[in-house]
Image 1 (cartoon, one colour):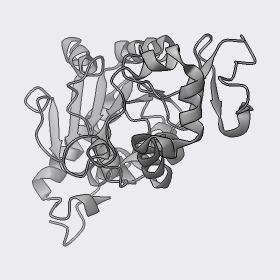
Image 2 (cartoon, rainbow, N blue to C red; image 1 turned 30 degrees about the horizontal axis):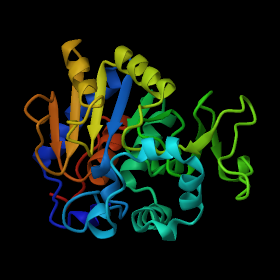
Image 3 (cartoon, rainbow, N blue to C red; image 1 turned 180 degrees about the vertical axis):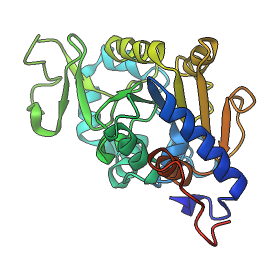
Length: 279
């Protein structure tokens, strides 16, 4: 939760802003969340770049990863099945495998369960929203634990698809096309089914909660702008100001776990008061 931001303090002023944001959520017709890497930092997943970043530590994946896959899918699958051959892949798998949802993921799942949140669009590949209980999730960049057919886009989880190391790459049992990991690689287009769903949700959205992302990478960068252009509300939740901050209808500065959990409190109980001693 706030362990990644030990100096955070929920002040009465900030709590009042969260309450105001919650009032907009309660009054909304169609709320959509957009999340990014910042939310998963609180689950122990470092960002990709910068000091301590996954790619800084283990090396970056190839910038032409999707092209390499298409040219030699057998070799790509062998690397997937033996990740120690690729340090960046092994490091990513190990880090994501031990991560658990934090209070921010759980708060969004609860908002969905309460009928207040229609969909969560995430740029993260860690699958933590699903682990937290969210069901309506659009994973723009895929999910590291799933497989996807390049033909019909069907996803496969766990042992749902038998993978024979002697017969790679595996084929989709539905359409016979090649199957790869669901994670969107460099050079790979975002799957059309996910992109279509994102635009459908954004088109209906009148309140968007943007958590843990500066929303500067397309197509996600345009989603909050589209909501604002349509006269909707954008609620930003970030520990630090971003390029979106001056444009947001409400900007809530602090760790996603703390802020989203408190937002949930206010949505459920409009008269919720800041606990004694938290100011």
